[in-house]
Image 1 (cartoon, rainbow, N blue to C red):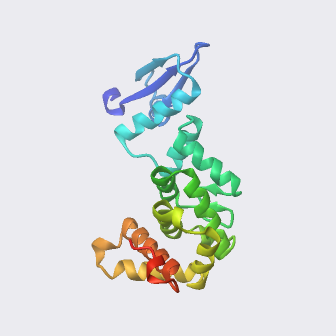
Image 2 (image 1 turned 135 degrees about the horizontal axis):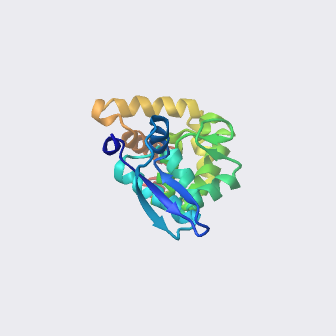
Length: 222
């Protein structure tokens, strides 16, 4: 029975207290079943931030945690990717985890922008999106942010953000953009309708918006 339950990860803190880093449900199951002991992997002398990082490592080894859980734990652990993301979100008065006027639900998409292109590009992405479509839940759609972020990450040195926002708005509302992205990305069949394909489609549409009305020599060529 004990082997079937598995083991837990424990941190023995400097004051002697034991903290379960991972396996609270297994520990609780033992308690409810009247099992007095459970196998534990014990770590000594860890700070809270190190415990958080250990949680991420162990969960990635066993199963992939939800993006929002990974984000929250990464913040606690002081992981730069998550800290930088949180700093930019806070600057814009946004939270991560659920879609709303002041919340971005696309956790993985946001982290991908920061990871690939840096916090400065993510900052510009949010600014351009809000200047184009205003502050609304639709503005923070993961596909739209992904497309703008990829565009700025690749060609940001060549564009003016205010002009980019105006050109994006000229092509339609956030809802219209989303509909067009879904329509175009699905034309390639089932295998081309995933998140990566949708972001690639969004990026191409941002390129088209920027190039519209520009002389050939001033256009961006993907």
